[in-house]
Amino acid sequence: MKSHHIHNVLLTSEQIQQRVHTLIDEIAQDCEAENLVMLGILRGSFIFLADLVRGFSQHNLHPRVDFIILSSYGAGTESSGTVRITHDTNEDLTGADVVIVDDILDSGRTLSFAKELFLKRGARSVRTCVLLDKKTNRAVDMDADYAGFPVGDVFVVGYGLDYDNRYRELPYIATVTFLEE
Image: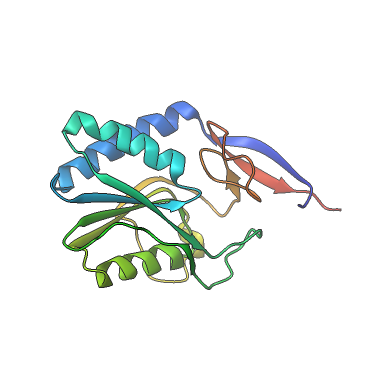
């Protein structure tokens, strides 16, 4: 792991929770309760997804929840450009209204891949929800249906986002600065 420093809190825990609550309301307005499936892209989405799902009870939404692991980063800080399924969902998506939840929309490859995959598997609709939207690095034409916050071209950690599988536990989102060695 490179020498690095975690600093500059971009989003506080309070800001994140406030936005999560508005996203819950937005998703609830658009989704049918009958066959809703929330699919988190592990590992970065697990905290965000848990907070979203907990809030759905106030809207009488009771989605099925599952996860898929899609990887394009490995231990690096930039996408390799190739998306791989390393763990697949077990949910039958036939006729389902699927909401894919991810931590960050960066190149767009992962979400585009997942959306196409779930539509091929028979989902009635597929929407995407991301905590962070980094439009500067888009490699494919992809926009999230629901986005928490825009973020610039910075590397961030916290609230599920990691650097080399560390810092996911931080209740806020902060930038990472890599130090010259």
